[in-house]
Length: 448
Image (tube, rainbow, N blue to C red; front, side, top):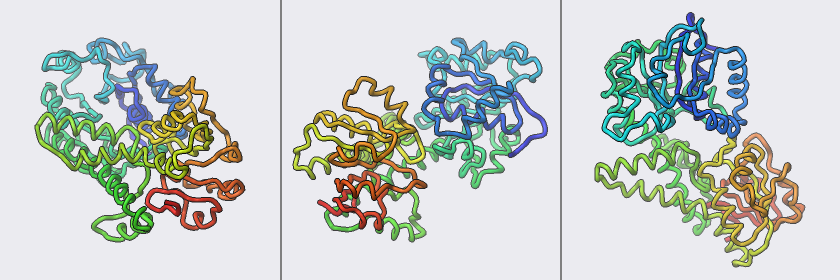
């Protein structure tokens, strides 16, 4: 684990997994952290991200050691920016050496309707030394963070987008980022944020430039990833009709160095929070500048439609005679290794199935708590502890996600020989050949 010689006092404001990961990593680097958050939202985040085992363990450890202290975010930002070590109840901790604000999670009471945001005014008017660095993170319209930096009466303002955080390994992915991007208000001032130096040094790649360029790059990276996914999904539909396996096509494409193999997986599309939020922010930026982007409109349209494609294949397979059937659904998260269902295909699939009074047996242990809270009074929703439960009563099985390290129970499926609707193409070609029943995937179906 990376260590520093002398710990600093860092103040973090936010309640997302990004903010909680940041607080945990900063403590691991030898600092003490005061985290200001919406406590209820933070508890919800903790409950949703139980699959982040390393983060959860360290979080509890650092809380017990008082190296990480959580406070309710104040309604008035002035009280936060005037905070001292003694006021925070941490008399043995120096005054803040870093402020890290997650823009999208700042309390609504911190905002004003005028051109200058209230929290910036309070920051500028506070007694906090103007030399204390301020780090901003989050997703918003292009140019927002550069504008905030200019409004701040301090030279050391930075913007760090979370293009590196990976669900399922958020702590490790921040401690050793694949790509560290950082925008700076004052050129060549990276030495002023010594607290971040270990993270920059551990990054596989890094780039530091002005904030506007980093904002634009963040949006461009995420939009490119979304475009690749939607491109492959559009081609998967053509592959279905041509009798071509889209997995083999993706493998061939990946051999071309100009393309590479990342984000070429056809399936039900992309979900989570980051990509959808990024595309929404880009859409608002385009509207504000009156610049058209037919490409990104198509990306969004394909992704929305792709989430319902596996249901349409199910409806067609049974010639529309699907009322009151029973189905098993394996996986619910927006990606393998996550327990988060934001913008996952599970939601449109469940609602479409329920509209036909179809009983659903869902195997999604990590996402169970989130689905339970969302569909508390749904009588057609039943959770199962093992994928084989209720398989005999099921007319079909849907696969929305599956852990890569866990073998699919092909033998159990073959005992009932029901059709498999593979929305993420997790069934290998060898496993497909072993199936006794029909297989329906995305761009590689045996049955059409």
